[in-house]
Figure 1 (spheres, rainbow, N blue to C red):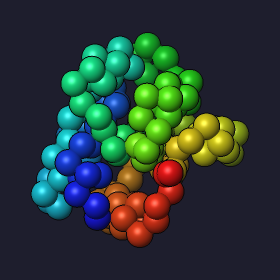
Figure 2 (figure 1 turned 180 degrees about the vertical axis):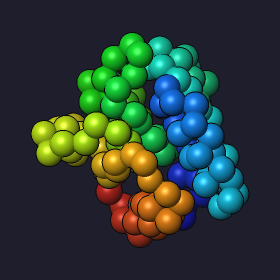
Figure 3 (figure 1 turned 60 degrees about the horizontal axis):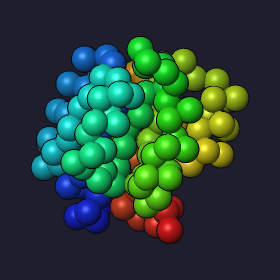
Figure 4 (figure 1 turned 180 degrees about the horizontal axis):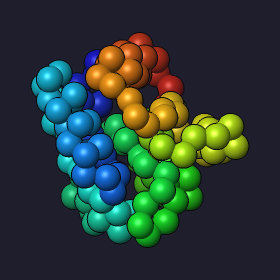
Length: 128
C-alpha cells in the first residue's frame, strides 16, 4: 500500500466498538488511524490532517455520511473513501459510489474484509 495512504487514515463512526475494531485491524498492519464520532469532529480534524483514506459511517449523530462525501471530495479530492454502514441498501450503495466513495462495506465486517479492501485500494489508483 502507498505510504501516503497508510499514514493518514481517518475513521468517522459514532460506534465506539467499530472504531476500536478498525483501529485493531489497521494496527496489525502498522497503520495508524484517528477516530472521530461525529461529522463536526471530522471537520475539526480536517484543519490539521489531510486524510488519504477515510472510513465513513453513514448514520451519524449530526448527519449522514452520504451527504458528507461531497465536502470530503471538495477538500481532499485524492482521498479514498470507504463507506461503512449497518444499514445497507442498493440506493445508499449507488449513492455513495456516485458521490465519490471508492468502496461500500456493510457492518459487521471482519479483518479479512478490511485487508481485502486495503489490498484493492493499494492496487488501484481510483482517485486522480
